[in-house]
Image 1 (cartoon, rainbow, N blue to C red):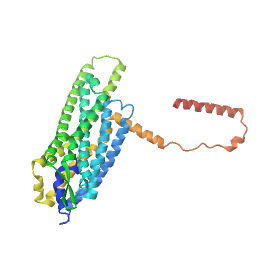
Image 2 (cartoon, rainbow, N blue to C red):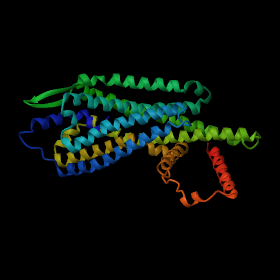
Image 3 (cartoon, rainbow, N blue to C red):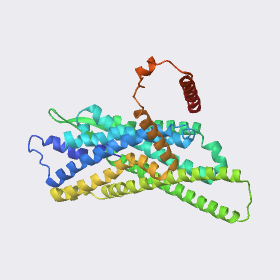
Image 4 (cartoon, rainbow, N blue to C red):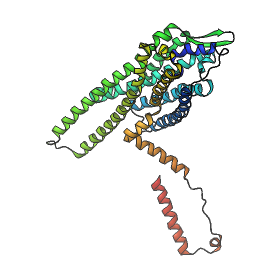
Length: 391
C-alpha cells in the first residue's frame, strides 16, 4: 500500500493527461504548500530509514545475535524495509519533485507495471515478516519447551522464502491488470482494470492492515497473559525457595534476555498498529463513501483537505519502514549494546595513531653501557609481554 501507487488515482491522472493542451493545470495554494512540506519530511525519512536499516543488518550479524531465528527474521525485515523505501518512497518523492500532478508510472509501460508490483509486494513481505516474528515470540513465551523444536533457523529460512514466493505470486496480476493506454494521440496513461480499482483494494486492506493488526493484538495479549502468570508464580515460590546461586544467575540472565527481546518486539508491534490504524480508517471511509464526488463540489478547499489527510496518513505509513532501528535501540538493551560496540570499533579504527617513533641520532653515536643495555632489554621484554597480553 503506497501513495505513489494508489490505484484509485488513475482516473484523475488520465483526466489530467487528456486536458493537458486544453487548460493548463493550476495547483491550488494549499496543495502546493503540502507538497513542498512533504518533500523534506520524506527525504529525512528516507535517509534515516536507509541508515537505520543498514545499521540494523550489521548489528544483527554479530555472533551473539545472529544465532537465533528471531535475528534472521529481523535481518530480513530490515533488508525488505530498505528495498521498500528505495522503491515506493523514492517514487513518491520523485512524483512531487519532477512529475506533479502526474506520477512516475505514467512515463512508460514498464513503470506502469513494476511500480505497483514492487511496492505492494515489498510492503506485504515487510508486514508479514513482522507478524511472523511476533507469532514466534508468542510461541517462545507460551510454549517454551516446544518452541525449541518449532522456532529454528531452518524454519525461519523456509518461512521467509515462502513469504517472498507467495506475495510475488499474488501480485503478479499487476502485469495483466495495469494497462498503458493511448488516451489521446501521443498521450498515454497508466490505467487500471475493474479488478485493480474495485476488488484488489479490499484484498490489500485485509492483507496489510486488518489481518496483521488482529494477529499482533492476539499474540501480544497471549504474551502479556503468560508473563503475568509467570511473574505470579515466581513471586509465590521465591519466598521459600533455596537453590544454587549459579543456577539462579544463569536462569535470571536468560529470563532478562527474553524479556528484553519481548519488550523490543512489542514496542515495534505497537508502533505498527498506531501507524497503520489511520490508513485503515481512511481506506474504509474512502471505499464506503464517494469522496471524489464530495471533493469535486469544492475542489480547492475539499480537495486540499483530502490531499492533506492522504499525505499525513501515508507519512505515518512510511515512518513504519524507517523507525525500527530507533525502536530496537530504545527498547532492546542487547541491541543497543551491540550498536555501541560497533560504533566503538569504528571510532578506534579512525583514531589509530599515525605518528612514527622518532630516533635521537645523538644517542646512536654514544657507546652503549651495561646499564643502558640492561634497561633496553627490560623495556623490550616488557613490550613483548604486553603484546602477548593483548593477543
